[in-house]
Image 1 (cartoon, rainbow, N blue to C red):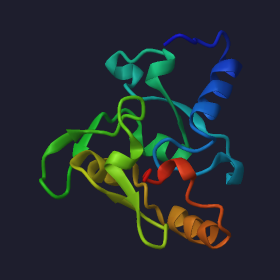
Image 2: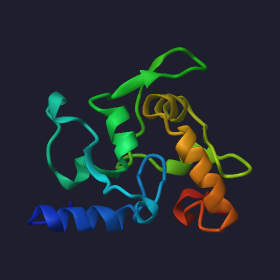
Image 3: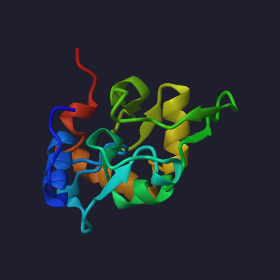
Length: 148
């Protein structure tokens, strides 16, 4: 990458901007969260993941905790082990879409389905929050919608 922030604060600002202020997994907006989001290692340090900007994602605490050091999960349709979604290498809309009422994330691929389950991306709190935000017309984030 051509830009490498020099401080932890600069890295965090860069990640927030790159992620449009949303968790790069479940698309929850930090602006409506009571907790600060995490700087998440896509390839965990336990697997020799580096602190490089291309290995970091902006993540809500729920997705971060559920992901932990996972790098694979089981696709419930094929029952095969697949890699988790990588926000640096893959496009969100290629693996996920919103339900008609925007309250749930639906997996479009083995990676999407496995990631939804592993990170518990449809936790009850998130479904309730998304439903309320959709009624207020502040959800879903524009960058999580397919481009036509």
